[in-house]
Length: 527
Image 1: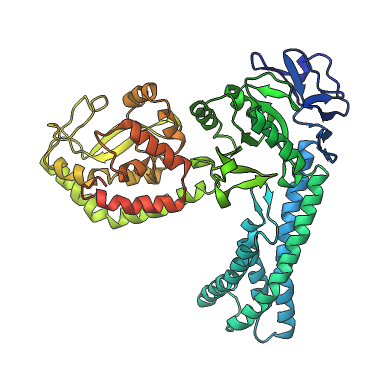
Image 2: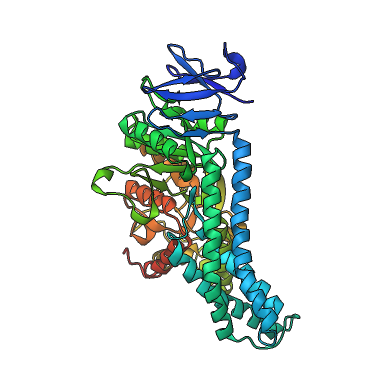
């Protein structure tokens, strides 16, 4: 058993073995008149509270709520949750397979069993994201439109795959597929899939009401909103989160213990293994809270924010959740913590390889122009700071005379160190063409914050609080700041804001848009 004792004055953490009067018996945490009382394991003193976050609280009861939410050991809860997720996908597969199997038995001359299994597999993959949104189990009526749309797409994808395989003669049946027959069978799959979703949804709701498939959640803020969120999560176990404590600077009589101060959040998350945090208007200001959250973003933690003025209906609409009338908007996992981030690296490899081959004649021409018009090497090599603050050597076509000040001197327009060829290469950005090699090496990405020299990274980090957070993702050849006109001798503060905005809202589609918007900048246009 792993537990912690927190001193709320200093925010220091002690292991349970170092705390006194701690029992390992079963515990009951009850909400009575707004104060927490743990029958065995939580010992409250004037300056400290004790809670075991790994074994959890066996039974939590809200004072104003008659229902009891049983909270089991965390690993047991997660194991049941994973089983329920897989069971839901199995229901989808069976619902897709059953009518097609009947079609195979009675329409054997029009459809093959291999196609039946392929269709069921394709449909299951397409339906996979629709079963849950984060911790929220999607009700059949809530996800009806998405389910129908994806089921309609399944036979099209199946037909494309079979056509490609048949073209290559890889052993798949060569007979043609009657699309109308498949479309008719798809109509039969919709009610079966929805029936399976209903059974799965009921199983999840039943399991969560008994304490399974629940994740611990921290609540930042002990004000009225924070207390309302804790009560709402206890009242709604179907959402899949159960409050285990607060994080704030106030010492109040609370229904759950304060586990530490906001500035201690990274350490709290590391030592407790909690994966979900709700931001509910605590004592920390917004700028401080942004900095604290960014320090936690290298962990697989999902943050939720209660939006300001939510009473007026100001929330994030369809991208958020509602728990007992309180909107919880999930904060996107930025950059490399996003689940889709490996797709960015795959895209970089494919696109950079293609661009390198397509521009090879231009590459050779620029290299010859540099070599024949000025003394010195073709490539300019310089140490820059990349992802995680790690240095690497960036490559460019040399556009300036060889000098010893390039690491500490800021280049500006009409710089007398620029060569004749450089006056063409720099405005057209052709001097950056060799950075495709950096991308292929994995040192850079096609799109990302532009890398800077160590001297200026140190200087800007001391002057701009959020500058260091630019290094959460690989640096890029082009970026959001560049396509908005900020490169060279322009505002560093605005660049930093644009770079961090890109990181917080990254998507593969956004990278494609930035790539297309980079084309006008090759002609020297700022916007």
